View 1 (cartoon, helix red, strand yellow):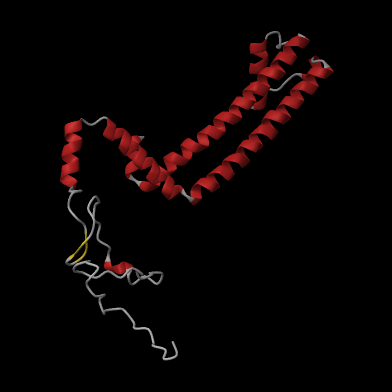
View 2 (spheres, rainbow, N blue to C red):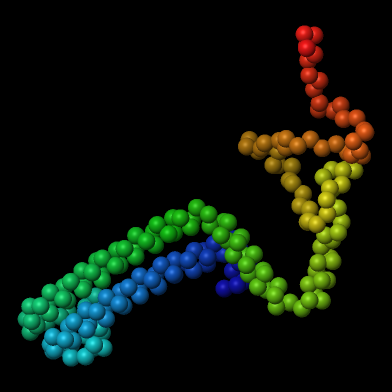
Length: 209
């Protein structure tokens, strides 16, 4: 499954399934507890096919999965009430809650699945990196060139410690493109040097002030 992080869509799917699995596990745990409770109650009645708690729980599970039908004509009225209550609670109640819970959880995850996929990919990368030798990690670090300053523009060197990725020219033609409000100028940054005249509008003078 670790190889699926190569694709963002598959990584998002794996992360969503993993998160939904916890909801399924919690719901199934509650169903098992309910089955044990009703199985113990039916075992106490000492009815046919309900003489031990294991067989009682298995019969209840078969009733819910429709693998068998109970013979109500040979049961006590209170036992029939217990079986009907269990089927309603487990099949109609808990399974309906599980479906609604999974739908709500998936809708919540689908809104940010891209971010969750990238976070999961970063987690896998860190785990894989922990298994690589120190010498190989140092070699990769040196090849990335984090000591080299990043160029904002021609002749305008920025800080070091990153990996530069060029912006495609098609981004500026997008209707939602917002120009950068930070105006940078090349050259020295001494406090005694004058401000550049490009892009700076002189404020109108007021003779009364």
